Image (cartoon, rainbow, N blue to C red; front, side, top):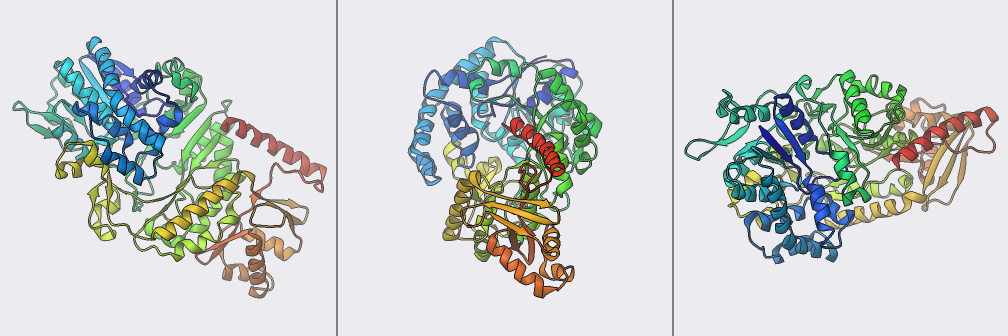
Length: 632
């Protein structure tokens, strides 16, 4: 069968669609003729000729406004074939802090995009496909639905299919029930279901009722939703994506001036931590939490094979959490390979120094460690399995290894207190040299999260977020099935405490580029160098064996009692030193533990260091400079 798979706005511009790359391979292996259409790039080339529009505007709709739904609202008029009143949605954007320019662009695009959908659908229809499939993740729902509706009008014989993260569980069934121009919705993993659907449409023996997770219509036109598979796809059956044509298409697009292309790979699905301790606020794994990982050899072959085929070295690894077995296999072999790949991973924050060093050596220029808060009490409420001091250690060790960290500070958890924040905020100036969070945000309730599924955890009454009412003409019950984001009565800290956290993080972000705290072992002492606005010292030396020994103990989070037991002189010596080091901002204390915050100074050569140490540091500096270039 002739199949066109479509990646609508607001899919990311710099990477191909992993979902469509996988389906292209799976359907192609089954003998079908499959093309991928990057309509998100088509949209960029169309819109830049009509309004002032650049990367910042695209990212507002694709990323920044996700929790307000601006990207979906833009295409809502095209979906329903009518101009929508902007006033109610404008109020939602204003309440969320959107700028005048952002709200004005939202209104302008709402007026314009029906013409884009018309143009796109005319081209799709002219190609005379048998099946057109759309993938929907984040803010791709209404754009995909709008194109599917018009395509079905223009070419009734074409079979329309929707899949993706927005179609998981009840969401997919609701989309299929409420939008009759969708012939099929594939819920869950599509490697098996989608080729089986194509085979059935082509006359094979498969009965639609036998395809797990498929939503379809019977002979009476009634919507049917098959049960989803209880067994997730084993890793051996997760196919390698086919990204043929993506780089070439991006090269011809106006977006080529905005972004550099990267490739998307996956080594695993699910979350090995979440299988035992599902973080209370997280809904990312949808209906399939079970952790499954490709063999290290196969994953490495995929990465290097894609690098050779597409002549690209930048990769986004989309795993929710890195398989720990990869440290002594994949990462080791990458470090030894001739490819200077640049990788982005999601990891757990309890990694140790050697883990981050291995990540850095393998080419990991950025990790998302899931830090999310620096209070141990709040982290316990999240069921994160780490402490505040462990999170600070992770930020410190990552920077020592030349690996950038990306994270957000989350709040609003039932049971948290103002003290969980005031004690941490007071110490944030000591951390201004470490990678700051991208921002602070009150949690939203996500479908599939424990907060959604277990009202006894603190959110007994949930409603679909208000943007869904403005985007879709659907009754409340249907919105409740379709929505992913939900609102409720706010829990945790109030507005004043949240404002104080916001302000402290903004100061951190402003001070970070010019802040520094490094440590360097020089013979039998440790030299610390500081440049942070809150502290008036620049060089501080630890010269006594007791000071050096205590500082080394603080490489790991430890209680004062443990430190006293391992230090000559006990508490009488340790307590004054901890107090003094707190005043100097070289330790972080939280939850009864302490940890030092100084980054290893591999690229700072002090005049007093002997020639041998200088030569060793020069080697390390060369490695860090290579990573800096790669990250840029």
